[in-house]
Length: 267
Image 1 (spheres, helix red, strand yellow):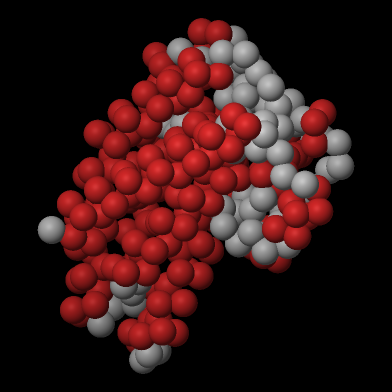
Image 2 (spheres, one colour; image 1 turned 60 degrees about the vertical axis):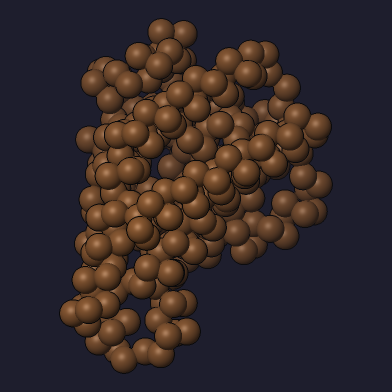
C-alpha cells in the first residue's frame, strides 16, 4: 500500500511541479530557444521510460528497507537513541549529504560519468531537463541509496518528505526562469538556485565539476566545490562531443553511455 501511495504521490507532485515551472518559464524565460515543446517532449519520453523501468521497482524496495531498519533497530538514528524529531532531521541531512557525494562521484568516476553525461548533454536547460537521466544512472543510484537508508535508519516519512523536496528543488533549479539577481543571490546562500545550477550545466569542465548539491548549498561551500560567475547569460550548456542532433534523439540519448567521447579538459 505504501509503495503504491509513494508512486502516485510522486507522480502527482512531479506533474504539478512541472506545470508550475513550465508556466513560469513560459511567462518569464531566462533564455529563449527554438523547439521548446519538442525538447520537452523528448525529455519527458525519457522520464516515462525511467518510471516504467526503474522508479516503480525501487519504490517498494526502498520502503521495505526502511521498515526493516525500524523493526531491527538498524541505523545510527536508532543506535544513538534519538527522539522522533531529531531522527527525522538527521535522516533528511543524511540523504542530502549522500545525494551531494553521489552526484560528485558521477563527475569523478569515468564509468558513472558515462551515464550521467546524458543529463548534461542537454543543449538547452529547462524544467524538462530535471527529468532527463539515464535509467542506468537511476538504477545504480537507487540501489546504493538502499545502503544509505539502512545505515542511517531513515524512517519512511523522512524518505517521502526528502524525495518530495528533492523533486521540487530539482525542477526549480533546472527551470529556465528569470529571477531578480538579488533574490537568486539570497536563495543560493541556503539552497540551489537557478543561476547556481546554470554554472553546473556549463560546457566548461571547471564549471561542470562544481555546484553538485541538490537542495542545501552548504555542502558545496563546505567541501570546496561552490562556484559562481556573473555573466549568467554567456553560459553555454551541453557536453562537447555530444551536441550533434543524432545524440539528442531518444535512441541517441539511450546510447550515450556506450559512445566513446573524451571528457572536456580541465581548465
